[in-house]
Image 1 (cartoon, helix red, strand yellow):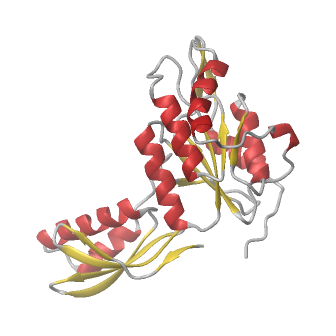
Image 2 (image 1 turned 60 degrees about the horizontal axis):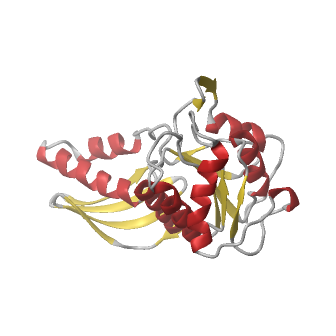
Length: 255
């Protein structure tokens, strides 16, 4: 799964052709004064290709052997909560990302659309006691770039979670997106739309259920965080753990 092809890229003096981009990482042919080299990196997304080229340029400036640079880039570890793949026995493609602002959400969804031709399900919300102006904007973005947007709670703090969801929904209504009753959805609907599931655990479980061989799931907003802020309570909650548990025991056959 992924987008293959040759694309000219530049980064601080290094030039490269993107050979392959997918959920297993990137493959880039780097052109340098010392020759042409192929580099593989487990990091996802176009931004990490530019970071790879920048890192190569630094290695060149330090006169490091090309083999050392290649090994170092291949050994890089993914940042927790940033386009992080959730291992699961079902074979579903599930990613968790910290995106909790309009620009961050737009960027991660656009990056996903470059990586896959499959439908995208996005689970997200907006934090309470924070800027309410971004809520309808994030609704518009999720509606425009997802097949199914699942609105849910994300650290509501002292605000009413339903009020937050209503403000997010306003952006989706502007785009005339269809609202689905989640209780009536046994599978991913054919037509794009959105639904509201205030309980984040239930939202993740339902979204995992709808994600199959023809869809990719993004759970956005909390990333590496392992808690949920509800009123004055700090509750243990990890999107990655919730998604993995929801996916356990259900096999998906990918083409």
